[in-house]
Image 1 (tube, rainbow, N blue to C red):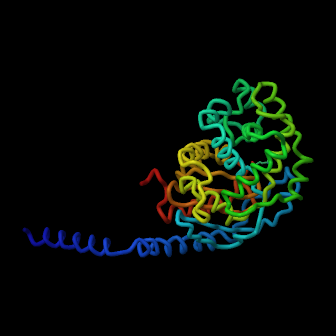
Image 2: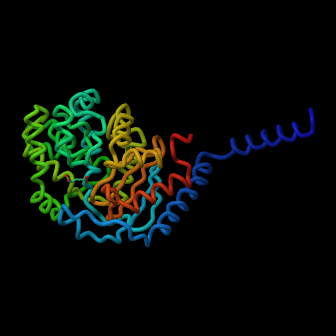
Image 3: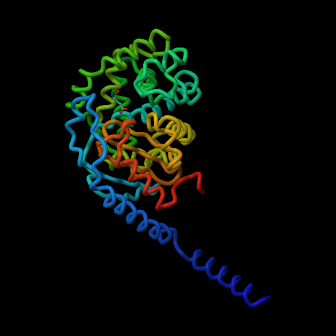
Length: 338
Ligand code: GLU
């Protein structure tokens, strides 16, 4: 054999041996320090960025500290990497839509969601009434307000109280701890939700609602007021990444067959009117909320969550988008690039 070929073979063999000798924990700990480093870098890089503005159409949201900034990554083993205000809580808002969708999918199956609610983008704002009219009375997907209120109305229950209990306990299972409602946000939002009530009544007229529209809107409003930290959101998204098993509590919260469906809807409609732009930049299914949180999922690997209240013109947290995009870029997490 030529000397160079021999050398290449030797290097390959030695490489394989040393790789094979490494225990899974050693392999994991290498990437663990890398993840921890990149999370810290993202925090430092965007800590002082002041772009964007808190949502103010729900009064209580305008009063949240705009300086709040927390980044958390949870991997499929339950390892946590974090920086900043990771335990400070905000209202979950639209991110709750992901978990109530999961609940209805578990109860009624994914075909029901596709046929009854829809899984396509509307191309219109998240609280659009026109979108319903333009699509023959369909909400189009579970992440615009119409589709989310409809989804909530289909949770199997004898009454609103029971429906709420199921929704709250489902979100808590995803988070691995008992979540509570932020009463101030709930009250503020209840007094500001006439438009959502109108949407629910319109859907009722089209025969789309599973239960009383106004009561479903109240339950939906409460689900949006659930209080979560960046840490909670990262565990919740890691549960979807980890085929429905909460990586911290090890509980199977949703059957694995549904997580690809949930991620598909997140890819199509997760970041309001900028869902396409986001997917183009990161390749990750994600969901944002007007409370300032964003979750993103690296399928089979990580849940990522960032909380930072100031939003851009689309209603997505400015720093959360930048921090997640930075982590994705530095760790090579875009699934389309694999
Ligand atoms: N509760 C909010 C609403 O219904 C949620 C909006 C959001 O986060 O997109 O308007």
